[in-house]
Image (cartoon, rainbow, N blue to C red; front, side):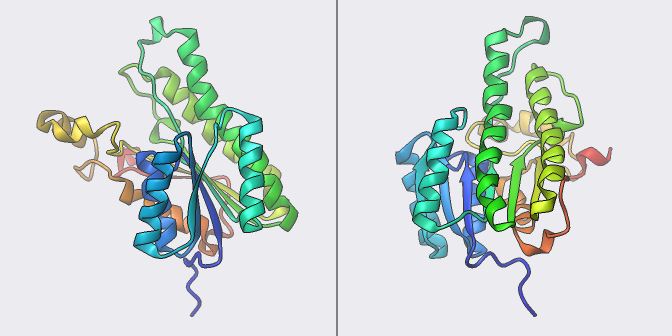
Length: 255
């Protein structure tokens, strides 16, 4: 039986590839057999991630810098990938930012920065990578959303939840526009995932207990918890799925 989850021969680009979730997903795609290109702002960090993927999985990999808020930068990234690898089969956008501020005091500048990175960056990346996929009428686009796409949250998260709701609805609409070209567009919607930016929660027993109590399965999420969903959405196993957000949340959105 053909392994419908295999990504051998596929070219995968992970944006935000030097971040905690991005690193985990990039490594997972490599383990599934894909050639992996990681992209972020810092070349030194990307080189370390690429080396780790190559050592772990033995797949071809490299790191290319790009600023996702710049059309010129993203277009250059796409051109560089196509020039080196011939095409793009899978694009994962794992970049993101959360600036927590009280809603009644939220600076407009910070609000705009959130939308520039979390929404504008997703739109620009989808725009240019989908053009490559459209030419061959095949491709997988996976955007990182959140349980906050459909559930509000306190603690200064008004901008964050707004951006994730935007990503979810944008992805649904893009899925409709690209369906005729056999391009699947889906989202992964995690609950809290422990990354370098949230490791302080795990390291504080009381805080970790507080957050874990919100999750029906009683524990905090790790980047590895998202890998299986990402591989599924990147593989032929999900060829008839598009416009969906798969919530990987320990049961949180079932409440």
